[in-house]
Image 1 (cartoon, rainbow, N blue to C red):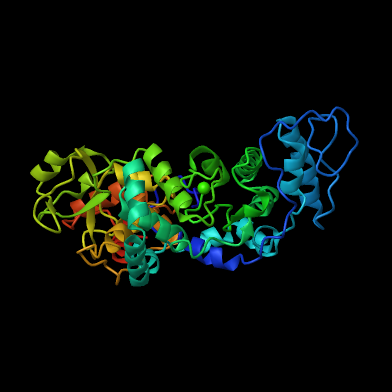
Image 2: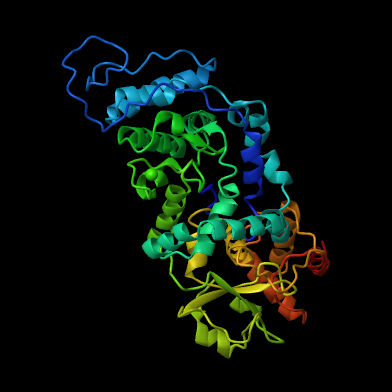
Length: 454
Ligand SMILES: [Ca+2]
């Protein structure tokens, strides 16, 4: 899971994750045996410095380390190791986490320059949500998910009983994160996070996760050699960051280890627990695909929760079946991710719970659709308007500037088609007798630029 973006991006974001999981194929190096057991071994009482001595000897520095061959990495490590020690982390654990680190191309190679220069951001076209979905909610993934459900009935029974999260949801998370454990990455989490810290943009985050890794080892929840991760440090079959692991991972097999790598029971229980503590509502849908009445006012697709009764009174009907039923859930927001021609959804609390795994709406939608797919339900009913080409960041900026010139108040010209931009576009569309869905398309851009005389 990559808890990266805090924006409510309506377009696909996480497509790179799967690709990068494959790309980072450097195997984890064998590491020193783990210092098993809790933090406080018997006092070392000034014992001589021998390998494996983990006595509380605050005056004794963790280093020096053998050079990684990267000066900035070496300097960061010396500094971070002493800070970790000052925080009370175990000396030998710090050593075992940091001694084998080495620069990775992904973070510190030559590609880094292009990434940090912002050139990528400038050139980036928002990927249409239907493209993201077609690469994540595949027929293969649906079929394998159905097989996994059938093959693990007893386990899913126990997970549902214990955590109150439906099996198809757990299967969907499992499928999205690692293709059901088939693809857990092959990086050493410590090395990945150390590289992220040295790279610098997310240093505080990466250092916090490294501290969490150290605590995992100190508490004996996992062993040093276990800590295999994907490209961003997420670990195991359901991709837990170390801090999330520390807070929410579960030993469902009861053997004293949390083996999210090899034990599907531990991994799925950890995911179930994380969803449950994030507020998952058993029995409620994540979303319901709906049909809107003729002449519907799209300003209601504003991200605000309204009562189901209100939505019914506005003429919304379920796309499948005719009853707008939500398993007792009372509130939902209307989401129109691809304009008036595409599928529309009422979204419930559980949709936001999915987003604790990954902040992108497209990810949460993929989880929801896959949870239906593994049950043999094809959704959505409506087709995606896949003939529409999304606007580039530069085009969105021109749209925003044009709307601002016309007095529609699209807000900052930032290339992100957020709420203000959509609302401005809706008012523009309303004034011209168009269907006012606020969806930025090339044809809308042309109309706005024409009206603005630019
Ligand atoms: Ca276990």
